[in-house]
Length: 204
Image (cartoon, rainbow, N blue to C red; front, side):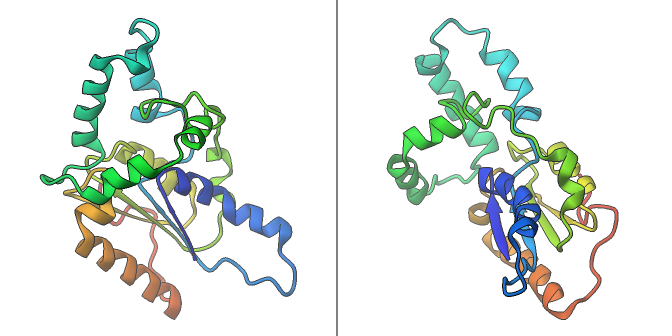
């Protein structure tokens, strides 16, 4: 099983087809895929066009302005983590992360990609994923339900569940529901139970 979340989920969308190229008779095949709060490209929706149009109109340099930082925090509270008590571990993770790596891959802003992933897009190849796939997202996620629907429609037989009280950090905001959905998915994979239809398991 490959577990991918957010940008890691974007990479996970390409993993199954990459594995096929290098698979040998002795290599264990990928059993299933789980992508949470992710998407298939870097340029659509709130992570892309919408915020790019708005913030690119600010005076240069826009990404270090106090007004920008305030707006970014307001966005984070609505669409990244809606918990009343902001988790300390999240702050620690933010302070500990390698900012150079993040900015090289994505860019200095959460709102739109300007790094090496700016033109990344595997949406046309989603139909090459042939393992059971679970898509998890939050109702208020910055990776919007519309983006998750494109993942769901592009991956044959995928299962999509929306966590109704979450934003981007579904595993922290609704841990019990998150665990329930993931456990059910893995149990079904283990038993070979048919579980997927053409419609999302939770309507957008």
